[in-house]
Length: 184
Image 1 (cartoon, rainbow, N blue to C red):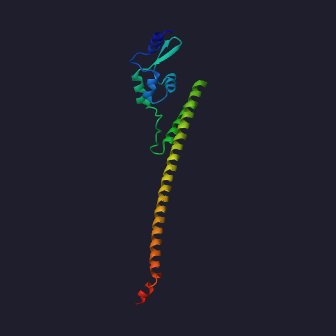
Image 2 (image 1 turned 90 degrees about the horizontal axis):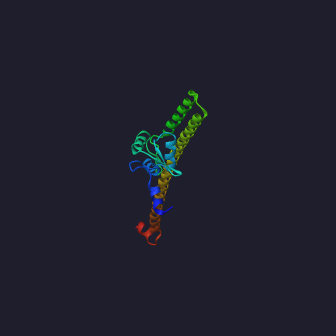
Image 3 (image 1 turned 30 degrees about the vertical axis):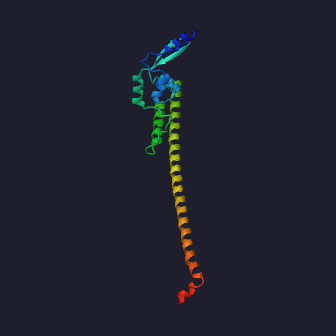
């Protein structure tokens, strides 16, 4: 393959108005495989374009915006802090709701498996939220211990200064002639 043909082959990507999978991943704050899973699950619309043996997905930016509006974005760089300490309770409630939906619905094994996977994901998120709360509580305890140690160090410095002053007072009485000055 000639270099010019090679470049034109890979430049024949989705139309400029559509997003590629990596572009959609950056917009959503997730990885490219996550975008492909969202497309496969039907949560994000995409048009497949076949080029030779490869298939490229073209994603409309309006669909990405709609997904962000409905579900919010992913955040790989910063972990979301629990706001009220009850986020994992909300996730556990969602897991219970999913279980009830599975029990109420006589569905085939594939959809039960999908619901089970979603349930596992919700449980993992609940566990991560609980672990984050535990880490936050531990960090707060460490801060308090550090402040206490600094207070102890400050008290020790003041105690040493007081002992030094007392030594000077006692020492002034033991200097020859000072005791006689007191008697006069």
